[in-house]
Amino acid sequence: MRLARVGVKSAALMVAVTFGVPNAGRAGDHLACYKVKDTLTKNTFAGVDLLSNDGGPNNTGCTIATGAKLCCDPVDKVGVPPQPGGSGPGAPTTRFCCYKVKCPKSAGATLDFADQFGSRALPVTIPKMICAPVPTTTPTTTTTTTTGPACVTGGCAVCGSCGHGECHKSGGGGGCGAPGTAPICVDSSQCTLTVCSSNADCTDPSRPTCVFIGSAPGSECCAPCP
Image (cartoon, rainbow, N blue to C red; front, side, top):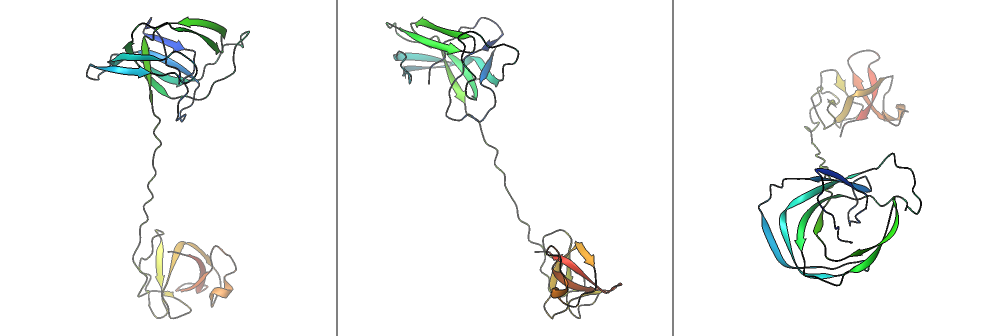
């Protein structure tokens, strides 16, 4: 990754280059950078090496000072027409915060820069700032499965985990019977009134369970309630 070399000239400025990052979870291929008053405790880190990944000069024995002088947010730039010699859109990037860095003098190099405003070769010597990525965090989703009361005695007792469970059992009373002897928990909000004497009479695949009720027509086909 190329190290950002920028100077603080105003309270807010747009950086028209794109930083490549391992995690490109945020939208926007440009960075809007803002002058900030960092709340981090001021500190220095000596003996830092800045090693280029794309043919730029390496800088060794540098010292980084915190806190940040600029912090940048990814944005989409709208309203600038294509420029002669300009490049196409860059890859989505992430947030960055930039810190002052001091490195020993070096011979420098001439680097090629091509962004959406044009192409040019520029001489560089020693970096003035180092910009650290702010990794994008992916929200985690937790699914909680609730197990409701078991269907045992019938009698229209609450059962299951669907939220509308109704326990049916032959001889269980309460107007909640069933064709067989085993108790059945059904979703009372997913039932169709019909004449049935067994599950074979329930032809809707979403409501395959026949149960008996105390009102006409005396039966219905329901969705099961696990």
